[in-house]
Amino acid sequence: MNLAKYDGVGFFYFKGNSRSGLKHFWPHPTIKEMENFGPKNVNLLQELFKIEGSHLMYYGDENNTLDQGIIHLKRKDKDSKEVISGAIEYSGTGESYKTRYILENSKDIFNYLDDEIAGKVVDNKFHTTQEWLHATHHIDYPLHIDLIPRHFKNPRSCDIILSNDGSVVFNIKNGKKRRNQLHHHDRGVRGCMNVPLIIGGSPEIPNIEIPFCKITDIVPTLLKFLGISPHTSVVGNSLI
Image 1 (cartoon, one colour):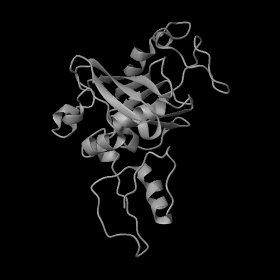
Image 2: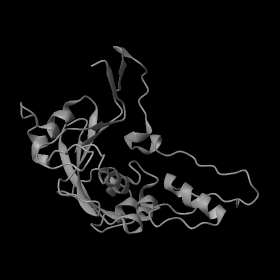
Image 3: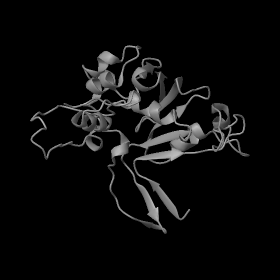
Image 4: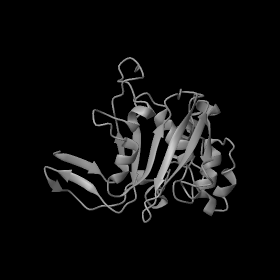
């Protein structure tokens, strides 16, 4: 290939045969098809993990709908190469949207149990966006249990997300490596996801400092200044 860019996360699309695709969308493959893909019956869930630096893998269940479903999680240990599994279950849309983190064989994909605060929401119960944000904003993979299903709920979603551990960069154009930067915001670790948010420019803006927020809080905050109530589909919260 003339172009290759896989430095933080890769979004992989594969055309399936079994499921009928929505209008204007090609059909997503089933899990069985991804395990036996193409004329050589390649197991994509195993072969993609052979890419150097590959660390985390996410893919949706074939029976998922907009309102409910399961996202499968896998993590490959950097040293032992052992692969452990987990899942996220989502339910609802808009303000009713909630997710729960499912451990398999007590294996914690995101190491939330190592943190006293985050460990409290690893309880096999559904939690809101704000609950996940409060519990995980200070550690690696903040809000991931909420964020990952949002991508796979979209009909245009990829079939497999593969996240890099930051040890290697594939960033090639016209046969030449472009740069060696290892850290990008989409890897999920706190050091490359958390960024400051500063709102200013008017005396009507209260002088407050908040410990954390999310990007979707910006719209309801601006609407608050305008005296407009956000649509029920808006998932953020006003910061004032």
